[in-house]
Amino acid sequence: MATFQFDLVGPERVLYSGQVDAVQLPGSEGEMTVLPGHAPVLTTLKTGILVITEGPQHGKRVLVRGGFAEINATALTVIAERATPIEELTPEIIDRDIEAAELQYDATEDYDKRREIEGHIAQLRESKVTLSF
Amino acid sequence: MASLKDLRNRIASVKATQKITKAMQMVAAAKLRRAQSAAENARPYAERMAQVLGNLAANLTPGADTPRLLSGTGQDRTHLLLVCTAERGLCGAFNSSIARLARDHARRLMAEGKTVKIICVGKKGNDILRRQFRDQIIEVVDLRGARQLGFEHAEAIAQNLLKRFESGEFDIATLFYSRFRSVILQIPTAQQIIPAEIAPAAEQTATDAIYDYEPGEAEILASLLPKNLTVQILRALLENAASEQGARMGAMDSATRNAGEMIKKQTQIYNRTRQAMITKELIEIISGAEAL
Image 1: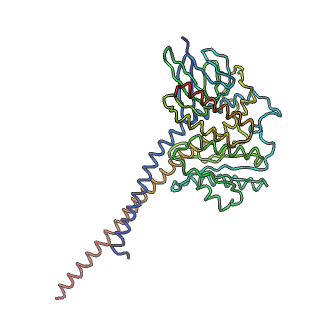
Image 2: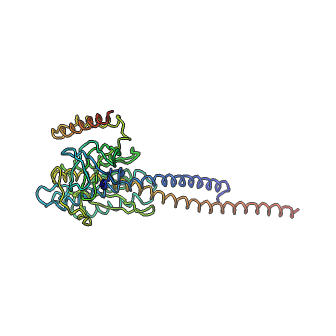
Image 3: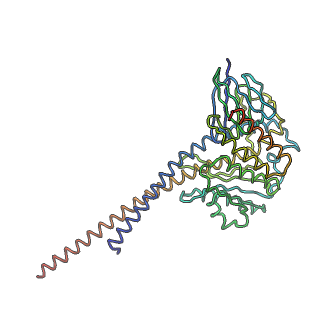
C-alpha cells in the first residue's frame, strides 16, 4: 500500500515523523481521513483523537487539542497546539483539562466564547469515553 | 605588609569562591544541555508555522478584512517593547546586552516623538531598565516560579499582549531576546511581532497547488495569527533560556580561571613572606650568637 510522509509537530517537540498509510484527523468541520494522494487542504483542528495507521494492525493514537493540518501533494503536517500520545495519557490529565475549561467557562460572559468552550468540554468528555477510561 | 595569617585567610576565601564558580559553571552546563535541546525541539514548530503562514499570506489579497495582527493599525504612534531577560544574574553580559539593545531602541523612538511602553519579562531586565524608564514600564512578568518553560507561559504573555492590542494600547510590538547561536555566541535580537512580519513565501516549495481551506481562508488566518504570536514568544523564551545558561557558563568559566590565577599569585606572596620571616629569624639568631 502506498504511504506518505506524516509529521506531527508540537510546540515543545516533534511527536511523530515517518511514513504512514493513513491518518484520521479531528478537523474543525468534521472528522476526515487522509490517504496518499489527498488534495491539498489546510484545515484547523478541534480537540479530538488523531489516529495514525502505519500499516495493518499497526497504529498510534494521539489526543490533540487545537492546531491545524496542512495537506499537500507529498506530505501531511499537523501542527498541534497541544498533543499527548495515548500511552502518556491518564484520566487525570483529561479531568484536569476539563476542569480548567470549566473554570474558563465560568470566568467569561461572552456568549460566543462560552459556546466555544462548551464544545471544547464536550469533545474532551467524548475523547475520554472513546479511550474507555 | 599583610601578616601570614591574613594571607592564608585571603587564599582560603578565594578558594571558596572558586569552588562556587566552578559548581555554578557545571550546573549551567547541565542546564544548558536541556535548554538547548528544548530550543532545538521547538524550532520545527515555529518554522512550520511560519511556512504555513507565509503560504497563506501570499495567497491573501490585502483588503479591508485583513486581520489587524497582519496589517497593523495603520499607525505607528505607540510602540510596545517586550523585553525578555533572565531572572538571575551572574551570567556575563547577557542581561545587560539585551537591555542595552532595548534601551537604544526606546531612546530612538522617544527622540522621534513616539510613545514607548515596556513590558519586562524577567526580573533582571526590569532592574536595569527601571532607572531610566520608570514611567514606561507598564508590567513585569515574573517567570521565576517556572521550573520548565512551556507553552503555557508563552500563551499567557501572548494573551496579555493581544488584549492590550485589541484595546488599542499600542500599534507596534517588538520582542527583545537573545538568539542562541552557540555556547560562546549569543546575539541580542529585536523582532517585530505585531504586526506580524511574514517571510515572503519561503523558497517556493513544491506546494504551488491551490489549497482548499477548511473553514475559510480568513478564519484560518484569524486563528493562526494569535497562535503565531504565542509561538514566536515561546521561541524567544526558549532561546533566551539557552543563551542565559551559555552566557553563565562562559562567565563562570572565566571567573574560575581568574580565581585560579589569584590563588597562584597570593600563594607566591605567602611563600615569599614566610621565607623572608625565616631568613630574618635566622639572621637574628646568628648575629645574636656572634655577639657572644
